[in-house]
Length: 221
Image 1 (cartoon, one colour):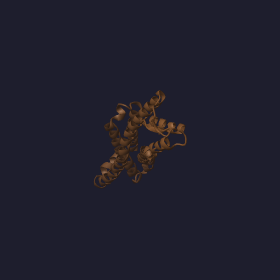
Image 2 (cartoon, rainbow, N blue to C red):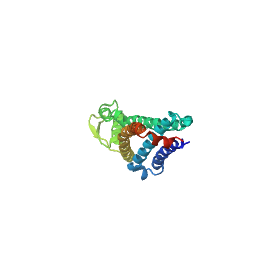
Image 3 (cartoon, rainbow, N blue to C red):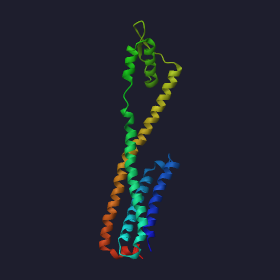
Image 4 (cartoon, helix red, strand yellow):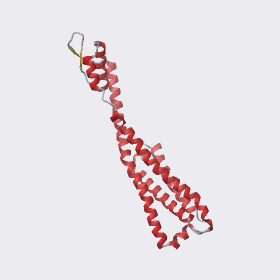
């Protein structure tokens, strides 16, 4: 009984996916950045899973007595296919939400400038000017109690806080670049995986019609 053929197809697809995940987790700065490796694993997984599912269904709907044994590899390959497609879809939705999250935050600079010039007390106006420097590194003039404007001079703590904020902002920009790459990649992976699945069934069906006997020798006893 050759139910082991579609079963090994499933294990091959699962192994290709695990190789990609292990490289991303253990070697994020080296192998984790080699897109050719991850795309190769995706190609291998898509092909093996699709062929495994096709062979399982072919054996399941055959007239042989052992056809019930093909249910298990059929379920495994179908589960891998749907889980992978769902992962690509929800990953895209989540990454898109995180990537555009910072763009939805309202700008605080105009509000702080208004407070630095029209706050109810000088202490509040100084506090607004301090916040502007800490967040943006810009020295602005605030209105003092004498009715004139004074340029805010940051303290050492203000400078240190701004430098920390600047470093955090640069880290966020680098993270967004990584997210942008993943955001562009997920739809292609989803379409590619689904396309291979349909192509496998189209060409597999043609193979059944043209060379049916050879296919039966592969999966049937």
